[in-house]
Image (cartoon, protein in one colour):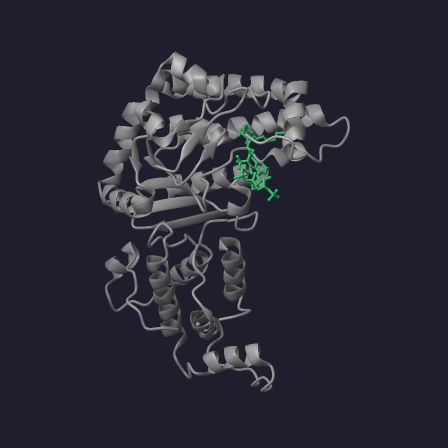
Length: 396
Ligand SMILES: CCCCCCCCCCC/C=C/C(=O)SCCNC(=O)CCNC(=O)[C@H](O)C(C)(C)COP(=O)(O)OP(=O)(O)OC[C@H]1O[C@@H](n2cnc3c(N)ncnc32)[C@H](O)[C@@H]1OP(=O)(O)O
């Protein structure tokens, strides 16, 4: 369903469909500063277009028409195309909605569009009231959605139909998103997932389509990608929070040791089945996990693939706090919004004080783990496990 809504949302945003309602707009920091008379900026508008992609509920045809009409009015001005024929129902409905806006100025239409999207976001169950950062590059389609509001930049894994498995493109995009978040004016950065999973780890199809004779090169470039990816987490300068909205597998679990806070729904599980996959730990977990939970508990997870419940992971110190699934989103975002109002420089510096003395060591561990994994990817154990998954013979 989310995928369908997302696809529809893209169509509206590209002007194919569309929208208005008078609603209370959700104020951004920028608009607070500018005062109430300001209208939405182009950036707010583009943010709102991105936000539509994250709506979990289909808002219904009337709202879609409103969105369409406001989008057209904001970008092209008053309706300027011939009225479609009476039997061309869909285009006529769209034309009527746009035409009904009359001579509404573009600025007002833009503002109304932002207001409407804000009201839809607030009433949906997704991380509430976050507005996408329009200036962020979001390549690779919508598999990654970056949003920014209230001092929080949120990076959302958005492949719910694939349990948010990470494609190579997504690794690159997450690095770009972290790079941008490290420099933007947000105080806190969040990683979360859309749908019932947080993340099912590395997309195992990353191992397919390797031309004969190119396996070693693929493993080498994979190890470079992994190392660069994990380095970005080691070096990330602001408080980094994982909002674990469901089960987590593989690399999405191991890198949690590099986050500053991990909030989890009680539905989440934490699973690192590396031996089952013929692989070995990454994300600095060979160091962070024993440090966090002691070496025998870390061995149960990383060597024997023991799956932890959210509460077990919290007891072991991997998770900061567990929330009932029914109130998870609400409680977590209220908490994070409060934290995001703390002085950002103080938070950055305190994070540095806590983390910096470990950085060099973590980079060395990351390099070592990546190099070991490069060898593992070439092993029969690993290749068999991937073939078994892809041929639907084995799941975790
Ligand atoms: C040499 C090349 C290197 C490339 C680049 C490397 C970059 C760095 C790599 C870092 C190392 C990382 C290691 C890990 O993360 S190990 C963990 C890998 N993950 C898994 O093994 C999970 C596999 N998935 C499952 O076991 C199950 O899908 C799961 C238990 C997660 C859910 O089961 P459920 O029954 O609820 O749902 P489905 O299986 O039906 O899943 C729905 C669809 O999603 C697809 N899916 C899910 N997870 C993955 C995945 N990890 N990779 C690819 N596809 C995945 C699944 O196939 C279904 O798809 P279809 O609907 O099309 O069948």
